[in-house]
Image (cartoon, rainbow, N blue to C red; front, side):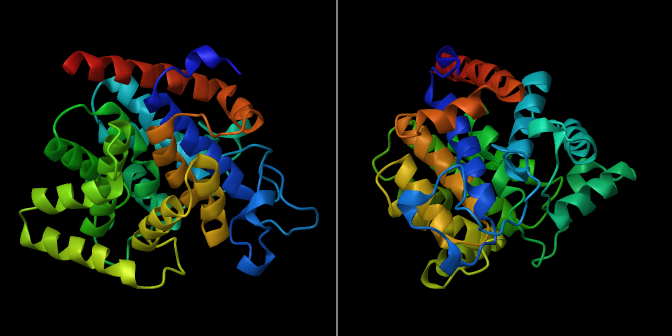
Length: 317
């Protein structure tokens, strides 16, 4: 591992996300009663445990990590959120395994694949995401992290950029508001806020002026009081991440708690890993877990781009 590449908490957030996802991959969809105790959760699943993706390369992140790397590459190349460029990169990921470990694609969302098929057929990227309420899987939420690492405008413009980043695959306000809320959460964690989740909710409530947006945000927030068994639904994903975050005091405890929730373990572990590392850096990520991910060429390239994001943010202060 090249430690000189990990100099900022923005870089740490990326690594926390990717390592969290790699740890979550082997446990995806494993019945909760078959999940090991938290202290036994690591890169290697217990012997004999059935895996949903037995052919995934060792140390591989899933679709969230690949989409995050594609978005970072696009932002670094274009200097802006170019949705058509992002969709081109996502198509290369899905078709050729770009941004994947060993170029192996072993997981992707049906909605994402259909939206990219529409883009391939000539639909503008900004119009490809389905707009129905039932089209709210967690594909846009899982890739939004780079927006919070890149954008250094005010909170209102961060929310706008996060929402816009969803459009190639997810056109409904629920997905967009979940992505915006996570982006604010990341920003506040990077800024050492004592209660970043609570402050993110309050900030988004204050910023929303459209009545429909306010109604959908209320729908998201009211779900806190409900069970969240299907955490592939974006609202349940977000609350699972919040629950895992509150279940531990550091990255390792929170990622293990995310996996113990079950179902979409890789996505929940990735998202809580990203926000935890944004807050604390890489201190609580085991070095052997961190090293294999950090040494991947695509990750080294992304860390260099994120370093430029940090420089731009510092210059704007």
